[in-house]
Image (cartoon, rainbow, N blue to C red; front, side):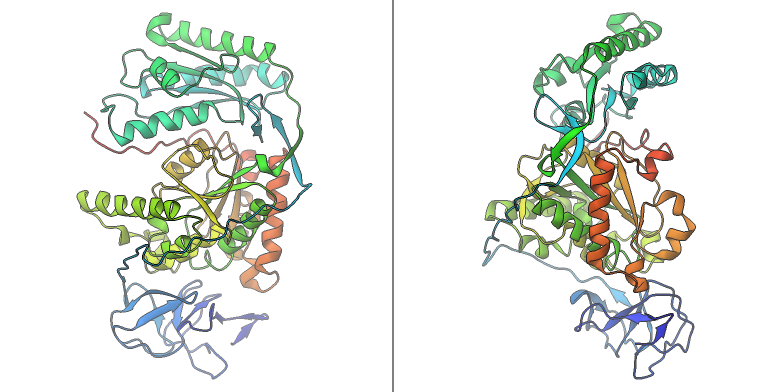
Length: 509
């Protein structure tokens, strides 16, 4: 391969690949291999170039996997992208399925310093939550949180602050629909989340999502860490804000002063997420995060991968890791649900990648999915969760969700994730209170442009100055440091109050 500053201009990711990835912008006429073959067009960084002639209809291979078919003849050195790549439809079944061996956690003395809760969970943060059941109670929740945070009273007692968890739904919903079940599970998951010392849930009173029914149905019976009321019962807005403020201060004063204590990594659950992906995602940040995920699991912790539309086409890689036919079947059931869901809504699963993904070099959902799956590492797939379903099995889990980042992370946190790791190639900016989020840049160019928003530059892998394993170790150590109280850059910038977005499925009437 041609070298520029000791870095290959084009890298082949697998010996079987017939395309390579440009590590930087290639002008027309740039050598693409050691045989002096040249690029036929200007090719942007992260985009693909044909390493050999590819006939129309032939498979296009990246990562050693088929990512699509050539929609026309492609010459050696030609840019390979959406203009000459067509989607390949795959059918996956459990015929001949063989369960994978469960990855065993090793004996580990590694720990993080967190907040031990009475139910056995450990928080990485010590927030107080104010949750709204419906859009109509969101303003009261926000105002109460703003007043408490402005006063500094809860911080003086050792808390990280008050987080308003609000949303735009909760009424005009059929209570028998999946969307309503998702909303209930999400609110219940946040209410019992270990990063909240305690929570206050505020309803309006006449909404579909009744707070008393929610609390009783979800088994939220610990009155030492939960209080709820309806605005209509209290007497209106000002009275409700005053009650919320007084109740939170009373609970904050009666709780033991929070102190971080050593906790085993078995009490750590990390959400694995990506957004604004590019052609480097599956080469640098995603496999590095996958290596870190393996380390978390091997030390006894858990990780949750999600975004079902973004593993479509690569599901066979997860099925090969499923510990039972039951787990594998649950994954295929969710993919079948998505095929039906997109069809009845006049769409299809392969309508991804997004415009930003395509600008970054991704051509098909198969290519994007193969890179996205890399975040999940290589350990056994121990369970498949429905959206926001509580995690009950340790190790590597998959959670069904859309590919829209805020919706997906909301579900992962509701399932129990007390940390978030987020890879991005285009430069996503977000945070996800109450769980701290670590941002992992896929390429050095974006990292240098948006360094104030990124925690780790995984672009050094493509630059040739660090290996996937070395960066994975860095991510693992960063996870432990942030879980123990070090602030992520998203936290220092104040992100996290606007990214609670429950998955809305079904009609609003």
